[in-house]
Image (cartoon, helix red, strand yellow):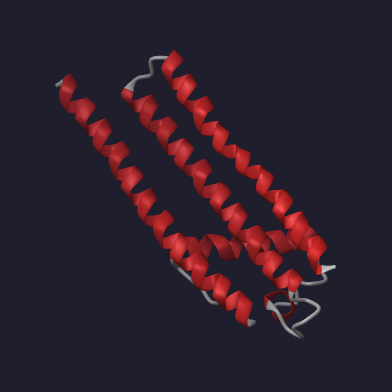
Amino acid sequence: YRLLRFVRMIKLLRFARVVKLKKIFVKLESYVDFTPAVTSLIGFFKLCVIILFIAHWIACSWHFVAAIQDEVEPETWLTKNSLHHLAWYDRYIASIYWATYTMITVGFGDITPVTRLEKIFSVFTMIVSCAVFAYTMNKINSLLTGLDTTTETYK
């Protein structure tokens, strides 16, 4: 039964094809000559999409970790927060909430890992989130610097 869940999780990795969106954006930008402000806005939009996809993948993985341990462990983050009997969208909202506040390094602590595997996944997520946070700050800085450079050029 757990193997079937794992196979379904692997099938979700097919959504990694979203990376092809980058090629579409690059082609679009090469066909149209955008102003620097529009180019920065497009860059910010692409950054937001990347962050949302990473948060989605982390949220789905976070739920999956609890779901595969449901039979083995008496208590997971889902059961501790009385979410295991709710509809899938309520569990997804809780998962995306956890993923988002973990990614932005706030860590409210209302949803916490309970099992050993959940704790390991949380540590992994925090490390990945630090990299995503650093990338985000660097990208925003690059966008703003590029916008400022074009402003100086016009002067």
